[in-house]
Image 1: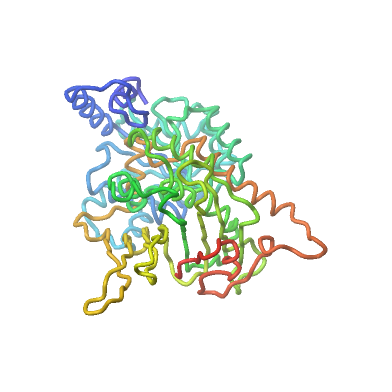
Image 2: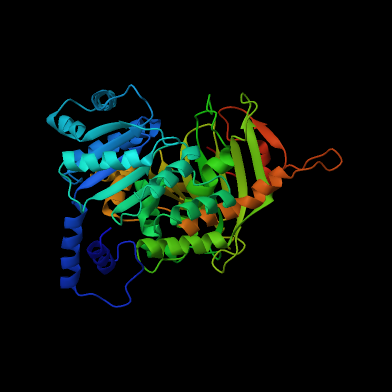
Length: 503
């Protein structure tokens, strides 16, 4: 990133905390014009893991959509790097073409123009000489007449075991010393607090925090981003968003898919909790940020994570009944938040595979009204369904016409009611990476704070010993029927009068 671009981004507030002094509309408009011009400058996107499932399923479809919408620099070069020796640039482009056609794209001049920007390089990330990669990038700059002031991204769409050699190789070759260079790292960011710290230390030894994009693709989902607007743009809810009015909060991420033949599955806790689910907890419960700038939002997330507690006594794990020999496929937790707003409000989190249906939702259960006028009235319940229906629903108690009784009804809003199309998560994330906006990406201290919350549970599981041959409910790995809501034992961590919402 050039010094001029840094100055412009600082003026605009992109990726920065709120400016202490106000800027005039003229200054803001001028800075915005400059930033937009810079965001269109030449770009080299180096995709490490060009033949990966992630590249096929998410990255190339998202890139092509951005290309069709003219949201990419006109002088764009994509360098796909993988270890397959028999693959050439021609055969790689043919693979990308067929892959996009299989996903519903049609033959078009746009597709040909997009494919023309792709080059393939055979390279082994563990044993290859990164000086050769640097040389190939230099050749590409000459072949495509790319400006020396171009932006270059290194996207690690690879197995976690390749993070360290890739980062070291890029760093030692001087490829990350370029201030116009950035690196994107997919989840999982480590497998413990210790490994997350080590990975952060490795990255920081070669580049600054501003050059790093830690990806959690859930943050690219429109419905997840909408949580900020829902909370802080609607006073009717924000004034009720505290321990005085809320009885409990429940967050569910249920999947119908099975583990299958995956040999890299690390279990429901490590796979989903210290990333996806903690992000939902943060956006639901954090304090209002000073602004919508990257660091202001992430500051509040870190503050929330530091007062979030997870006790091993309130952790239930399970496996679906046709799964053998692997880590847990289900985890349910009862969390506490030790701050003024949320003290005493239980937060229930669960995620699992092989469940009854696929759904990600946040359920806010409000307290029962202290009145005997309508003894059958049920507490109000707010449901924010992030997928698949992408809706907001709140229950109300209303009088039944012609009767004296009341009945529960719901008021629903569907995100699909917008005329504007909902972009895929990776479209938004790739566009933000190119623009240099780090709002939807995890900061280094945030990644470590996420792992710090779950470490008491992981450490306890590793040190479990039997008590006279018996284990507590929280220590047992419970079986649950395939296609169910999960193990019945998950009910034991709930407070009296609380129940999981049926899937």
